[in-house]
Picture 1 (spheres, rainbow, N blue to C red):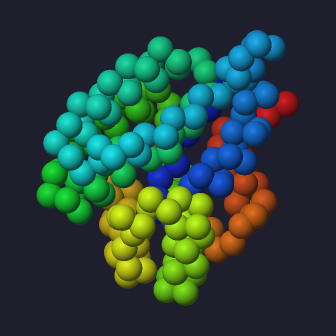
Picture 2: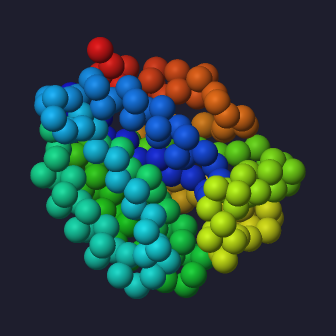
Picture 3: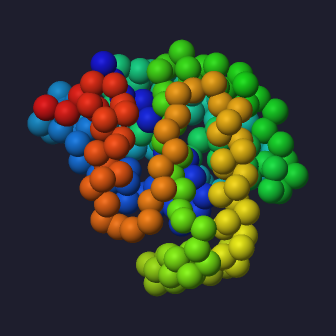
Length: 193
């Protein structure tokens, strides 16, 4: 059975690192070609539209793609929970949360919500690491308190989800224990061969 996983969490929570580890397991397990990487499709859905009026419509279009790929492993970096959080932050509510969730549930999506410890110093360090890698992020960087508030919103909104979800705190990287917890929680041990 194909795995359909949504990785949610505040900025700086470690989604990209964790997803890279899961992708390394799912891609070879689901591959059917020696010519293309078709064992797992990784969608980064945070492309600047969360918190804007077209977010709901864009998410619905993604759902059509996911339906087409329903028999393949799919991992998403942010989706409906992030759209709801950013919508709340920027006064552009996601009006179709329940409908989107209903369609995701039909496609057997599950959510992994990553969090960070409540530590201003840890957030400041992660923010500096992000700025070192992506200097352009400086234009939208916020205070550590803002990231803590964003995380609190994720923890509230995840409670409204109808999808199965797992909340994990990522205090450090690398962290194989987190990967093991995801594998144990997810059906069929992520179909790893």
